[in-house]
Image (tube, rainbow, N blue to C red; front, side, top):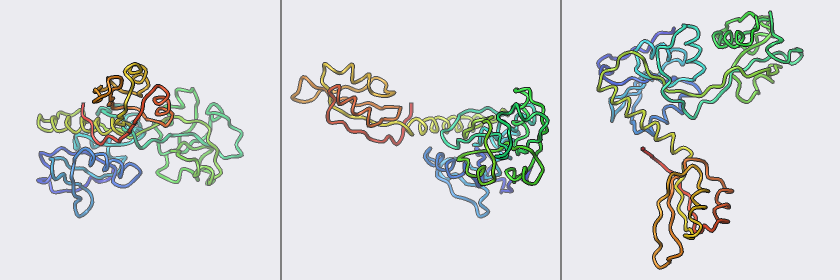
Length: 304
């Protein structure tokens, strides 16, 4: 494991520490999430720590591969990391020393097997006794075992896509998003072996009461942020006779607030938070049911 960030111990002792990827596809999303949770922070001179200004929470910026170990050892009480990285750590070390407390709504990717375009393989079952290059030997070996395929897993630190051209492997297992990198290296995707999102993990090590209360507060705020990402606040006018049907059409809404309209006994005002996407088709269906004066607004914060 790479060296952990060296910081002034007095600056972080007694403070909740959350490990984040220092530079990669999860970094900006994770910092934005915690900022939306109300955490104001500044970076230290070496950009290894973000110090919480309004809460005793410090963000430790490290390599993503180091995050599971830092959390498992209790050096950081929590961390945000890709499920692929966390699961790989668990499979390699044979135990889980943290809890996947929340699956977050960003950082989606998939780990997939791929072969050169000219290869005749059609599935993982055709890779028996072949060499598969990957930076995820634990996940790759686990998947092969579940399919009953015996193959040699070649562990590489990088440049997995060019391993077949270098003669180091017959196939690869690597993260895929758009597939452009595979095509650029004349590779063809066979099968997805694992789908991943960012996750908030929490150590199994004891956490003192003050830090636990702070951690629970951050988790409640994360829940609130995730709830509003797709949520919309809808206001509309509805005929009383159609209220039940209009309520049914509101996507993912709990019981709406129904208010009388001054001077109109046949209509009411309906206010509702919809926790699912509101599409144009939704509004058109509401209109067909008799709704008028519809207004859809974004929701900034929500706390159950």
